[in-house]
Image (tube, rainbow, N blue to C red; front, side):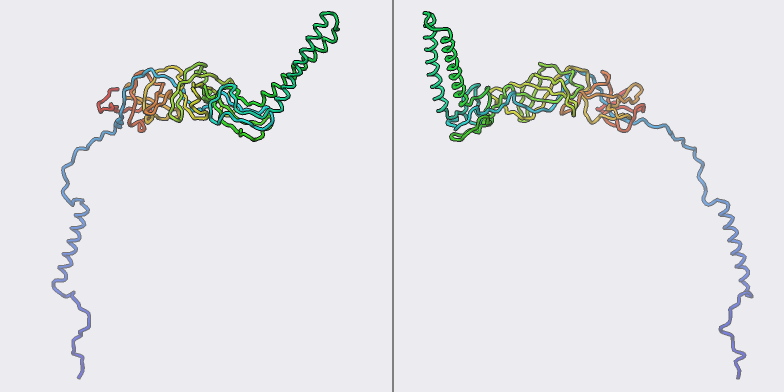
Length: 378
């Protein structure tokens, strides 16, 4: 028995002879054509009614800035400088004799008068020499008197009188030298002041010429400042200055000296201001600030925060002029205070930009508004 009549279960399926196969193909082709035509027409969704074109204003808007109305005032010009106080006089006291110190009559820090004794050196030998010289002087004086009397009576010659006169002169010189040596054993203050240093102790030996003390004259006290050459013409001898010491003391002083030769390195001039200092209560060497009034000017008082730099580096202020136009005005600072600065270079009446000056340049049109918020007309 054979399998020739068995059905082919693994063969291919064929639908060409199916009665519905041709109709489906034509439906698919028709749908594709309709889809392509619809997409090509651009008609996907109904378009809205055309709107009128909006015209935008492209003109730049003026920058809003805050301005402050300022009126010029008379301001006192003041030159300020830092300086240091120095004593009016200072010197070391030297021993003018050699020997042992037998007494010290002052202490370091004392106020001493001119000629006041500070210390004394042993002078026993010098006192004996002085006594001998005085005795010889007395004898020479008697001899000269006798020779002169005898000459008047015609007994003594002129030569005898001349010899007696020379002997007396030599005795006078010996007494003077001994007195000077005795005086040199006493060390004295050369002028009134404060004894700033003293190295004398009783019993020690000092050499001739050795510095044993230092005395300072701090009345008046001299404050030295260096003044730039640009301001030298505004300073005169006798001007009154305000002196503020670093200790908090405030004193009034007077310009006593103006240097005639500039410092080679700093190109500044030495100026000395004398300050009364009774009893030398203020020590020398203190730092001080000097304020010298040098005249008046018309200026505006502003905050340093509104200062600007011009295109060429000039320091200035931006103001609002007619037509709300920005102008850059170069200025000069003539006086500085803790709460602001005084400047010159602006007209008497000015509208100063206080906020927004960094966003505008000279020639720009701005929308100025007063500090309080009110509109300010240009």
